[in-house]
Amino acid sequence: MTDKIRSAALRSVALAALAVAGNAVFAEGIEVTVVSGAVGNAVANFEALVAPWEEATGNTAVLVPMPASTTDQFGQYRLWLAAQNGDIDLYQTDVIWAPQLADHFVDLTAAAQEAGLIDANFPSIIESQTVDGRLVALPIFTDAPALYYRTDLLEKYDAEVPTTWDELTETAARIMDGERADGNADIWGFVFQGNAYEGLTCDALEWVKSWGGGQIVEADGTISINNPNAAAALEMAAGWVGTISPEGVLAYMEEESRGVWQTGNSVFMRNWPYAYLLGNGDDSAVKGLFDVAPLPAGPGPDGASAATLGGWNIAVSRYSPRQEAAISLAIYMGSAEAQKQRAINEGNLPTIQSLYEDADVLEANPYMARWQDVFLNAVPRPSAPVGADYNEVSTLFFTAVHSVISGSSDANTALAGLQDDLEDLLED
Image 1 (cartoon, rainbow, N blue to C red):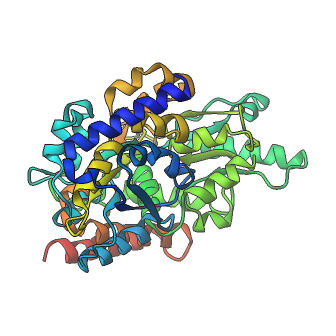
Image 2 (image 1 turned 45 degrees about the horizontal axis):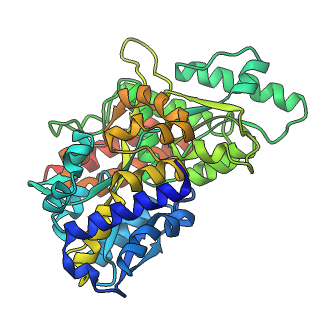
């Protein structure tokens, strides 16, 4: 599809969004604010993303960037919403935040139905953003992490793509040692997200689940984290720090991990889909030299690959004095054409099913077809069973995990304390 045709298609979608939201948005000169985190090139691409909506409406969309840490982002959201801040019209939200923030957001069900977006999206993703029958946020892309690996280095050392964590540990060490012996002193075996924030909850949930250690809090509300398999998984990860992973990984978030990987200084990386497109950019040292696979499995009969389900959505604040224009922009941002633009330009996985058969999307991102195997192993964070307490649950979990991988506590002690803290929080 040519840029001219794509631009025209996007303008038509923007106009359709206007019709859904109502005539009030035709009053030109409205400035609508969108708050969003800053990962990958989403901030840089925002202006191009919303340009068709702006052209169709005469209104302006202004991005308010947030820290890369989703934990810090969530905390700021709660402050603004608790204060009923009318300066922010739309919030870009993580898939896990719907139950916690639902009371502050407009119900988008009717607008989404009129735009045809309810049936167009994966049902499970619409369900994840529906609270007490209200669609509180509209999906804009989905996420699940994968194992990134250097195809050239695996070929050089006659190594297979690891399917278990033991294989990853051994392969990463062997290749790292070999490369360092050849003079590449900066290379590491494996980088991941080890900072004490929501990203570590995602990584550690994958380790624990893959070892058969459960999902922290199970779907029925059972607190399951204090078990031998979970402890073994965390001790495994602690063993990586300073051996196949740099000490600095304890402060890494997504972009720090990608920075090491994209400069060619890691054999393996755990990260989200957006890193694939950037890794093949002209400024990347690993362009054309890597591929992705499902994350490794733990040992034994209970071992299986696990990938934390992610994804981002757009919600309209109840406190916005510009709700009609905000709803119009939300419908546009969740549309097939806007998701297509994100897929092509940012490497984000669409939530609209038809886009996985779209020729332009697959031409730009042929790897997206391979993410199907990753999604088969997707595991949700325990936001549903713990509801409004999720942020506190996650904070307790990633704090305990960080104490283990940083060496300040052993896994058994940390998980016993975590069990007690979760019981105090959830069983009051």
